Image (tube, rainbow, N blue to C red; front, top):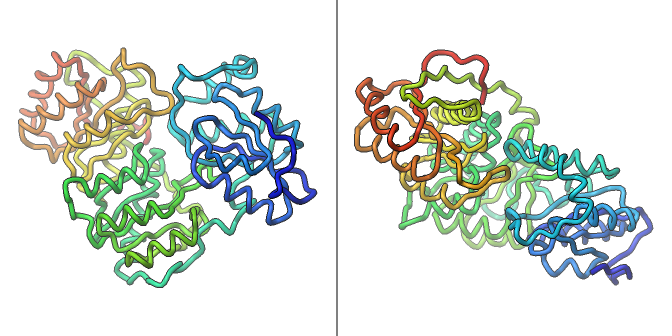
Length: 439
C-alpha cells in the first residue's frame, strides 16, 4: 500500500529523491543519507525483494509487473531524480501481476533484455530516463558510502599483496569487453577464481568447497568492469564479503577506490580487523579498461551440425574469454549462453564448473526446450577421457556447441567430432583470424 504521510525520519524541502529498491540494506542506507543531507525521499519497493525497513520512509510497494505504478507513484511524490539500488532475483513470471503500464511497455522491455548485464542495465537507465526521470548514482547522492583510497582498518596490505591487487585489476580490464569479471581472487600473480554469473559471494564460497585451501594468503580484488553502468550497478563489499574471505584464508580485500560501495561500513571494517584481513581502496585509473578486446580466431566446423549465428557469437565470446584469461589463470573452459558469460573454470575442474552452471539462470534466458550456449575448451584438456567427459557434461547442461581452442591434436579433434554428433552438439575448431567477431 501507499504511505503518503511523512515518516518521522523525513525532513528537508528539496524535491524528493526517488529510490527504486531491491533487496538488502542499501536502499535504507541511501534514504538515511539523503535525509541527513536535508532531502526527502520516496521509495518504490519491489515486493519479495525490498526489506521491511523501507516502511520507515514514504513508500509504495509494487509487483514486478507494475511498471505503470512505479512511474505514477514517483511522479505523484514529485520525484525527478531516481536512484536504482539493491539486489534482485530473476522474477518468477507466475507471480508477476502485469498492469497496463507493463503491457504498453512490453515491446520496449523485450528489446531491453537481450545481451549481457551491462547492455541490459544501460537500457534500464534509458527506459526510466524516457519516463522523465534523471537516474543518479550513489556517488551523486551518498558519496560517503564509497570506499576511499588507503587501508580502512588497522591492517595494512603488504607490497606483495598490493602487487596481487594490481594484477587482479589488469585481469578485470582484460575481460571487460566480455561484460564479465567484477571480482577475482589472486595469489602469487595468478587468478584462483574469476567471478562470472554466480556473483562474488558464491565465487568465494566455492573456493572453500571440500576444505580447499588454495586461496590461503590470496587477495580478493573487486572493481567495476570497463564501461560498467555505475549509476545502477556499483560493485559492493560488506560484512558477508569479509566473513567469506576469512573462511577461505584470504589475506584481504582490495577494491577500486571511489568506485566500490561499502555496505554497513563500520561492521565491515570491524570484521576485517577482527579476522585479520586488510580492507583497502586502491587507485585504479579511470578509463583504464578502454583497451580493445582481442580478436578471436576463425571457427572451422568439425561436425556435420554447424552453429547458427547466435551460436557463433557465443562461441566467439567464450573463446575470447579463454584467450584473455590465459595469461592470468589456468583456465580449462568457459561457458557462455546468449553472450552472457556463465562460468569460467579456474582450477576446480570442468565437471565442478558445469555443476554450478546448472543452478544459474540469467536475464534473457529462455526455457530449455532448445539448446543454447557454448563451451570453449582449452587445449590443456589433452587426454581422451577429459575430452569425453567435457562433451558429455556440455550436452547434459543443454549447450548447443563446443569450440576447441587451437592446439588440440588432430586425433582429439576427430574424436570430438565422432562423440559430439550423437550428443546433439556442434563442434568447431579455432583457426586463424576471425576479424568480424570480438569478445
